[in-house]
Image (cartoon, rainbow, N blue to C red; front, top):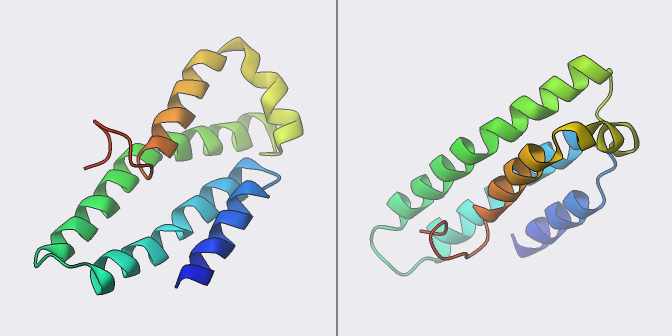
Length: 112
């Protein structure tokens, strides 16, 4: 499972477009849930796994909407075409991506 998680991280950091970034980010949830459920020490580990799943789904949904919006409006999700078009509303997109990726990090206030 750790190797699968490492592979998912390599794909996330090696993504060339927003769609592959989003899909690999969501696929990295599978090994994380496996580690929590099967290697957890507390009796309520299934509750913790469902909380991780729900938080990731809720906070990554706006990012998914942005990926779909960029694919529809620009015709592509490539970083080389999407990033220059972001400068009009870059603060919103930056905050959206920041919140999306903070959910899986152990950050106080976001990490449960």
